Structures are given as C-alpha cells and as structure tokens.
Amino acid sequence: MSDGTRIDYVDWGGKGPAIVLLAGLGNSARIFDELAPLLRRGRRVIAITRRGYGLSGDAATGDYGNTRLVGDVIEVVDGLGIRRASFVGHSLAGGELGSLGADHPDRVRRLISLDAAYDRSAVPASWQVCHRYRVPRVPTSLASRRWRDGAMARWRAGALGVGSPAVSSDLAATMRANPEGLRPRTPPAIAGAILAGDMAAPPRYTKIKVPSLALYTSKDVAEQVPATATPATRRAVIAYSLAKIRPWMMREEARFVAGQRCGVAYEIPHSGHYLFLERPA
Picture 1 (cartoon, rainbow, N blue to C red):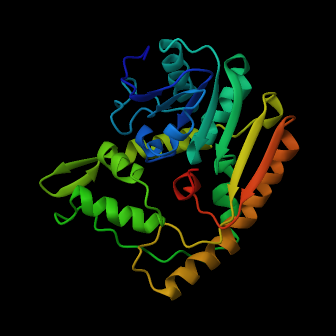
Picture 2: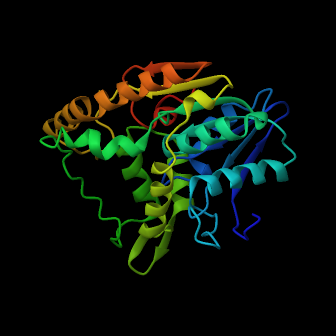
Picture 3: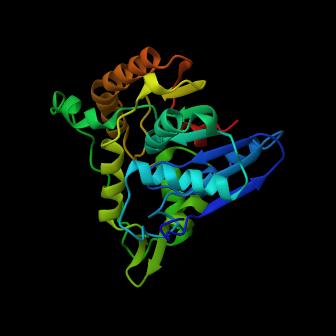
C-alpha cells in the first residue's frame, strides 16, 4: 500500500464484472473459499484481507481507521486494474461498504451486506438496557498444546454449525503455531484499533446512491457455541439473542431501509451470523 503495509488478497479469476469480498473482524480472505467459486460464473472474484489480519501486514503507520481501510481496498482494486466492482462485506466490513458507497460511488456497482449493515457506535448504549441477559461463557482453550490445526478447525466448524472447508483455510491464515499452541496472528490491540475505527465511522446511508442489498440473520439459532453444548445452554443463547440482539438488529434494518434510496433488506430465516457458510449456494 502507499504507506508500506502489505495487503493479502485472493484472486479466484473469472471473466466479467468484478466482485470484491471483504471479511469480517477476525477473518481473512480465506473465509470465502467456499462462497467465492460459486460467484465466479460470468464474474471475476477477489477477496481482500484487511491490514493487521491473516497474511496482511500490520499497519506501518499504526493507522487502522475506516478511511485507511477503505483506501487499502481502493489501492488493491486499482492495482488489479479494476475500475468498478460490486462489493460484498461480512460483519465489520459493513463500515468499509458504507464508506465505499458514500465516498467512492464511481467505483461501486452494487453493495451487498452479509449481516453487516449496522451502526456499531450505538451498540454499547442499546445493549445496556438488557444487562440482565448474558451469553454463557464458552471455554475455548485456544492456547492449549492439544489444539492442532485440524482439531481447532473441527471445533470452530462445530461451534458455527457448518461443514465448510473455508473454516480450516481461514484458521490457517489467521492463527500461528508457537510452543504454547495456536495463537491469533493479530494482537488484541490491533483488533481493538480496527473495531474502534469502525465504531467511529457510522454509516451514511443517505449518501449512498448505488443499489444496495442488506441480508440480515434471524438470531433464532444457537450459534458460536460448542457442538457439545447442552440443550439448556443452546436455549439460553437463543433467548439472549432474541431479547438483546434482535431488537437492535431490527432498528438497524429499519434505519438502512429508510436511509438508502436504492436499498433492499432481507432477513434469512433460521440463520446465524455466518450465513454464507451455513448456506453458501
């Protein structure tokens, strides 16, 4: 990048208009290893790993703000000779999608949000009213020597309730083995800086004129809990999601629809946050 930071991307090839996939917080471009080939017919498909994650480098200047992250995306597509693209973003990538649409409309054909069209700056305040609910803690023992790549991938896939091979390839990109076991490549301080940058850049839906689709999840599944969790634990997670997360989600969905001139929202029934791993087709 122009500031010296290395940005990793995966190019699945294909011919036609470009689709650029942007991962959520904690994931790499490899999280799309199953979805991307399905999009390749009549399209060129690329996925980008944001700075600080996976095989991308840490920011040479320490800048992880929204403007810098969006600048990385523009520089990558420029380097690949892509003038305009449809951008698909999962989770935290909603912040980058919003800024791409508002500030770089000439570079955008369409925006597609995978459980990503949210104003996360409102999360702490809105969730405080539901403080009596809490998600049961899930011990992961990520630093244990017994966590080999295969075991970690199986545990993660079970927690997400998916069988996608993308889970394994994403973990290989985002985790590093050391004498203590597997550890995330990304230090907590960098993850926190990226999240803070996203929260400091709320969506400007009224500024986005390109066609936009926001897919939302139903929040009525017990996701991101171990496959061995008890029925009682699963019921508690679902109750928490419906009582605490879903009302906020519905307000954000209404905000998206009201603000976007060319915006359409759709809720995927019985789906979790990683809906594109659950039902990639």
